[in-house]
Image 1 (cartoon, rainbow, N blue to C red):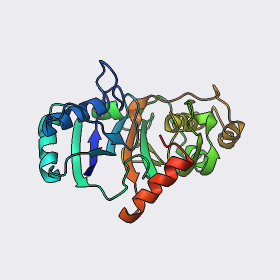
Image 2 (cartoon, helix red, strand yellow; image 1 turned 60 degrees about the vertical axis):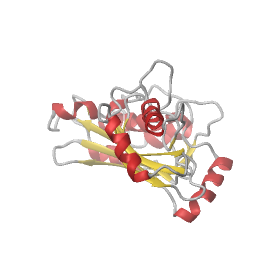
Image 3 (tube, helix red, strand yellow; image 1 turned 180 degrees about the vertical axis):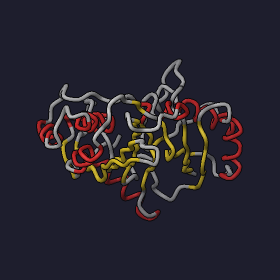
Image 4 (cartoon, rainbow, N blue to C red; image 1 turned 90 degrees about the vertical axis):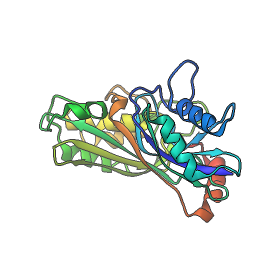
Length: 266
């Protein structure tokens, strides 16, 4: 039986998602809890978005294959009783529909990045999840730069290269808003992201907001398809995976097969 697990975590003290020897990772902690509850020597979960060290999630999804005897409603309580000492919370455990793959069935991933500039209210309680910058940023210019980039493109300029991984992605949503306390929040959604893509896009927009780049530079840099020093990649702690979207239950298997043959989502 395949289970779908929806969960959240504070990534501050984790060395990213993927298991690594002698490092505290989200996958290592989650799989360890699953193995304990299910009384298995080892277990391997598959996640929708493999977040980097320091990146958070409020809407992460994974799947795991278990015995048909496992009761999802009991598993969620057992897992949370173990994970209360950590930074992971299980929100839902359900039986996955036929063909479901947490990674390949996804049709979009949505992230948010939080920035507190000089006109924002500075709340030390949110410092672990928000980038603080000293200048006043021009949110209107940042939003214009962001929306100019929408569509299916090659994102080499904004990606850290990975072997055999495509850099063609469809950027579906990219916009900025100010919250009630003045905090700037970037909403970024795509069918999939290449490595460091969101943090580079945010870094470019911050450079526009500071006046170091123009709005038109966003498209120009993208079309150059080369790594650049015109902006810096922002730190991971401001980034949160907030949602992973899937098609209807009877379409998840076809979507997974299409994704496997067309591209390798990250």
